[in-house]
Length: 235
Image (tube, rainbow, N blue to C red):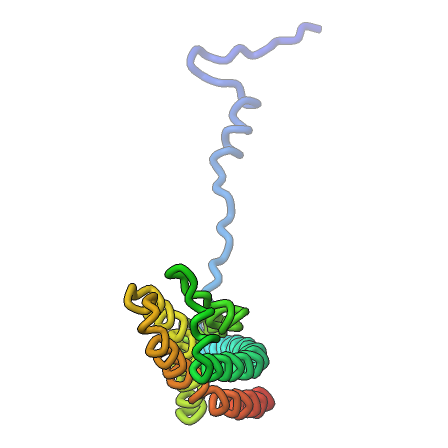
């Protein structure tokens, strides 16, 4: 038996080859589109949620800022209080020392031979009158200046501010004593024998005016300020 194979005519593709192409021409089914429709209430709800979140963040930020400021203020006031305690202790010693210097000067004024021993070969022997120097201690103001640079003046009541300002101003006046005595003793006329009495009188006046006259008052104000800062720190 002979088998005949049909030959495709020129330009004509076999049947088997047509089937895949027919399948390829079939389009893929489209997926259904899903549209989310939101109403006005949902938009309002989302907007309110965003507003609430922003407001809450701002509120927390402000709260943290205030807590940090309160902590910083408390630390600054503690530093000032410690500085005042230190200065009060130094001023108590310095006040007593300056009173002793003033008594020694008075003794020299009453005893000419003692006064003459202070001036030797044109040199004024200050150590006879003030063995520890013109000033006995340095009254500090580092904490006060640091606090002012952090705007502490806006964070305490006017009464406390006035008290502190007055204290530190008086400290400057007491420290100024050293400059005034220096100017007096560096004047060539103070080195003359005939002027020794006037030099001693002017020294005594300077000690009284710049230090002794305000020493006890300053010590009392130190104590008041320390108590005041303690009260503020407990709030």
